[in-house]
Amino acid sequence: MNGGPLDLLAQMGLLAVTPGMVFMWFVAGVLLYLAIAKQFEPLLLLPIGFGILVANLPLTGLMEPGEGLIWRFYHYGLQWEVIPPVIFLGLGALTDFGPMLARPSLIFLGAGAQVGVYVTFFIARLLGMTLPEAATTGIIGGADGPTTIYLATRLAPHMLGSCAVAAYSYMALVPIIQPPVMKLLTTRAERAIVMKKSRKVPKLERILFPIVATLVTVLVVPASAPLMVMFMLGNLFRESGVVERLSGAAQNELMNIVTIFLGLSVGATMNAATFLQPKVIFIFVLGLAAFAVSTASGVLFAKFMNLFLKDKINPLIGAAGVSAVPMSARVVHQVGSEANKKNYLLMFAMGPNIAGVIGTILAAGVFLSMLK
Amino acid sequence: MGEALIIFVNGIVGVFLGMSVLYGAMHLLAYVVKRASKEGQP
Image (cartoon, rainbow over all chains, first blue to last red):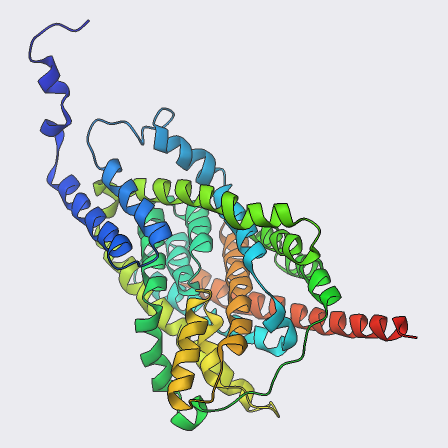
């Protein structure tokens, strides 16, 4: 037993609070406000905000390596690379590849939008970031939260929290970020293009696709395997129609459980020492730039494709090549219907939107294979 | 900076190559499924 009547005072966190911690409480408060009052990506921003708050309470030991409760979630969930692939299992079970299979050429829009990832990577490197840091910043442009977290954990763990918050914040801000870029790069006549109806995709093709896609993509970029394999397995659960329980569990219970641990542990990596650095401002500014450039490159690539296509596509759907499923497809639909009320672009935009997920996984795979 | 340029080029080539191969596979898959369904008809 420790002696002294004032020992309790010495062990109180109150006396160990630093100005940096107070600032981080404010950051946590902003995220919690956005999640609860504005409903911006609440499933992630709420646990992230709470994680930031508790990680910046003194003397708790929650993130103490080898001992802390949240450190264990972080270590076994993220450092062991378990949670992001499990999230992709759920995403696969939620994804309908039908719109993409109906018009295969739209997958190139998912690739076109990844140009923004690499342009931002290059700019970040020019600004003095290391190669792994620049790659982690660039992938924010793919607008895919789990992929950003996966790549950050592998390449630049010290940037994990800020990159994840940037990615999810910008995904919530898709309706504000994307429309000005889309309108700037297209004429009203282009936005009003009505696309030809797509074919109906047979059930057998839907079942075989995840198997074929796994073989093809993993053979080309093997480093993309952890995310791609789980994504396609989830989709096979869904499309096979024989394991509804597994499909339901992957979409709901499993996804919800890992989302709690993902958000909490990502938030808890953001302590004052790692967050209050000039580099974090770079991450947020470059992340926004990555998002805008990816949107622009998707739209421009759609216009480029129109030079060769007999049945013209509406270039707006190129903007859905960033992932942000289904938010960016909805935004495309909304901007398209402003130009032509008869235009119904949602299902067409879902093709590049889903292709964008595959594109971002491939982009992350290339980074990993070259930098790891 | 040379390394960054190499990764930049490899990245864009890698993503487009992956998507191109997938594009080809999707067309092949659609063709095979169409043929199979035709052969199954009386």
